[in-house]
Length: 403
Image (tube, rainbow, N blue to C red; front, side, top):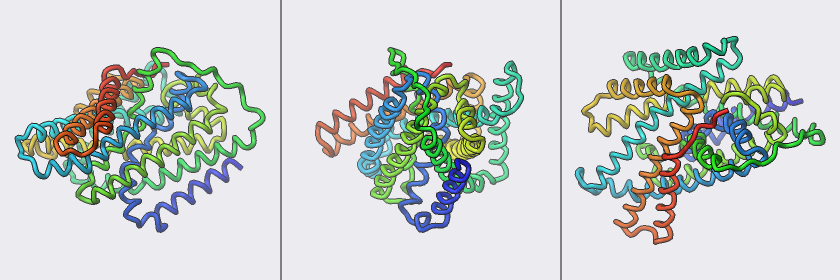
C-alpha cells in the first residue's frame, strides 16, 4: 500500500506541475525559482538534526526556524518594492549604491559556499549506500565534489552550462512530485501504525540549542532569488510568488517533521546528514529510493543554479572588470576550498552564516530605504532592526550540528 500510494502521488503531482494548467501560469513560473531554491535536501537533513538536538520538540524548533525565514522574506519583499526603485534613481557613487553592491558581493560569496554545501550533501547521500571504508569516506566525498565542480568549470569552455541549468530547472516539478510521494508514503505508514508508535525522545533545550538552530538557516534559505528575477517578472508578481513559495515550502517542512514524529527516536540516533535514508528504508524500501533520487537531483540542480548565480553577481560587483568565465572559475575555486576545509556538518553552518550576513545587510538596506523614502513607520523599522540583529547573531554563532 505504501509503495502504491507513494508512486501514484509522485506521478500525479509531477504531471500536474509539468503539463497541467498550473505549469502554464505566470504565478507558478515565478514561484518555481524560489521554491526550488528553498526545497533542496534541507528538509531531509532537518529531521534527524532537529530530533538529535531537540528531541520531541523538533516540530516546534522547525516552526521557529520557518517563522524566522518568513520574517527575513518580508525584508526582502520590502526591498523588492522600495530598494529596487531607489537603485534606479540614485547615482553610481551614492553611499547606498555602494551598500547595494556590497550586499550583492556578500550574496555571491554565500552562493559559492552554498555550492559546496549542496554538493557535499549530494556526495553524502550518494555514498551512503556504497561500501566506502570509513577511513576513506571524507576523502572520497571531497574528491567526488571536486570532480563535479571541475566538470562545471570545463562546461564553461563549451557553452553548455546554461543548457544544463535549463534542464535542471525543468526537473523541479519531478522533485516536488518525489517529495509528495515521500509524504504520502509516510502518511500511509502513520495511518497503519498509529497504535504502535514508539515512545518519543524527551524534549531537549540547552544553551547550545539556539546556535544550532540558527546554524540550520541554510536549509530554509532560497526565497531571496525572487529579488533577482526583475528582468522576467514585475515587482508585484515577485512579492506575491515569494510569499507563496515560502508558504508552500513551510507546509512541506512541517508536514515532513510531523509525519516523522513516530521515528524521532530513531532519527535522533541517525548517523550523518544522510541518516534519513536509514529511516525511510525502514518504512518502505521504495521511500529510501525516493529520498536518494530527490536528494541527488535537487542538490545537483541547486548547485548549478547557485554557481551560475554567484558568477553573475561577481561580474556585476566587479563592474564587469572580471569576465563571466573568470568570475565562474573564481566562485568554483572558493567552493572547492570550502569543500576540503569543512565536514558536512560544518558546511551547513558555514553556509547559514554566509546567508545570515547577507540577510543582515538586506535588513540594513531596508531600514536605510525606509528612512530615505518615508516608506513604513517606526514599527516596520523596528522590525528591520530586530531581524538584522537576529541575522547578525546567526552569522556570529551559528553552530554545526555535530553528532
